[in-house]
Each structure stands twice: as structure tokens, then as C-alpha cells.
Picture 1 (tube, helix red, strand yellow):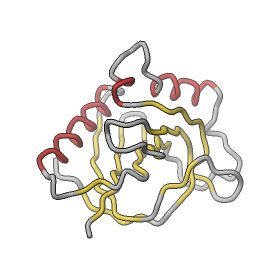
Picture 2 (cartoon, rainbow, N blue to C red):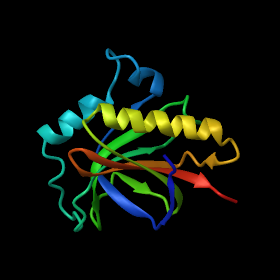
Picture 3 (spheres, helix red, strand yellow):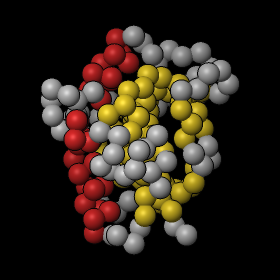
Length: 150
């Protein structure tokens, strides 16, 4: 799977946030992301004021401590204009990896292919500022990874 390069303007997401690590997410006892999504739907957090006409749901990775091995924030949310934003997606270049299939196995498989892609292409550097999953349906995701092409 070859990712597509896209340039994004900055935009804001409002939702719920937890801090975690990939190591914690690999252990069902300490994993937080699945529980965060459950809470997002249970609390109907997608019904945010100031939501823009973008029906996608977002999982935003930000506030990276270092790289894929350090802590980071994950925010489940919707795109908003005005009002209080939980996190801002930075403007810049992103490699976009897409997937379709049954959740959560499909999104985990896309992340595996992302990690493999960057292992095979060490010349492409991740920014570790803001990455995001954009869900356009219950079985469709586009994962945007910030990269520095300079």
C-alpha cells in the first residue's frame, strides 16, 4: 500500500483526550484508546457545538513526548470552528494511509503497515506533532501521518 501525500491547513478538533503509550496499548489491562472511543459514543461527544459540516470522526495523536516509543495524547473528536477546541491539527505535509474493513482489526492492520513503511523508508521523517485518523464510515479510515519533507 503506497500512501498519498497531502498538504493540510490547520484545523481544530473538540472531544475527549487521554494520555497513553504504544506499550500500554499493547496490553489489554492498560489500553486506553478503546475505552476512550466507547466513552466518546456513550457521552455523545460527537454532538459538539460549533461542529463544522464535516461528518468524519477523528482520532488525533498529539503532544508526543518523543517518538513512537514515548507518551502521547489521543483525542477522539469532531472538527469544529470557534468555541473551545481540545486539540489543533497542525498545517503541513501528511502521508495518508487508507483502510477499509472490520474494526478494530482493520485500523490496527493499517497502523502495522504504517510502522513497516517508516522502517523501510528511514529517509522520510515523521514530525511527531499531530497525526490523525479520519473515519468517514464505520469501516473506513484514512490515517494521516505528519512528515517533514525538507
